[in-house]
Image (tube, rainbow, N blue to C red; front, top):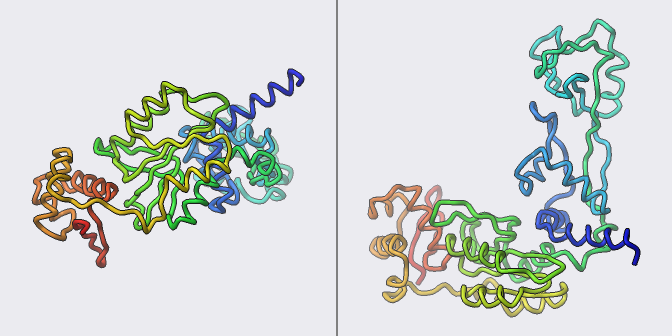
Length: 359
């Protein structure tokens, strides 16, 4: 194999080790997303909201999309021309003859935008809201803006390396609804993100929290520690860490010590078989009874909440908060944590949400 080809393979491995790539392709394959479309932004000119779920910094979104296009996973097409300042590059423009008339039509059709400068007379002016420069109509600069589409041909070539889509499909066949990525708020009141959250009722009733790691080498203990920290704080009914291809021996021992469910797999076919053993159909998920021994095993803050629910029988978060003497927002987090653990259930009656012990 040539050096250039080896480097290309290495780059591809690195790409699929990036969970953001897996999550985005999972949304395309599930039909949740069909196109990534830019929207206007007064500071950046434009941004891609669908990608910002995975990319915290909006300025990095387009580079991420271009990288996926370079590897044949996305196709792009010109969808607009954005007017911008030739001096500083800002797209924050006002019509100088009509201040306040911002260039909100910047993402108009390509044909209209491309001819906008040609048809403007020299006396037409724009003022840059960033640098203050005044630009004559024909001196305006342009920035090409692209939409991105899923490339079926490109993804078909690497379907054996994709994790999110087949796992979500498996869970849906088992009766679960899924979110990817999904978020749970922990005891610390910190919001944690999991690659997939699966639930049988309301989204807050997440019973399964799943993370995955894709690598071309054995995965070390740092991924196990990160998963354990999230699970410890959020306490889902069940948590699964999916590893491609496998853990190191040290990481495996650590996962056993943490009592984490780990699925190691080298391909999607074997992953499916292991998931069948680890994930029961949604109707077979059996919450534990909240008996005396279970109450004693709970952390103090959750035990206090559970005991008030036991006393009230069925109550709202406000009523339970009155019984514990804590703020409603704090109590709501603890109640949802007990729901995820399978000790409580909740039901909606009109605008009210009622919590009660699972019998």
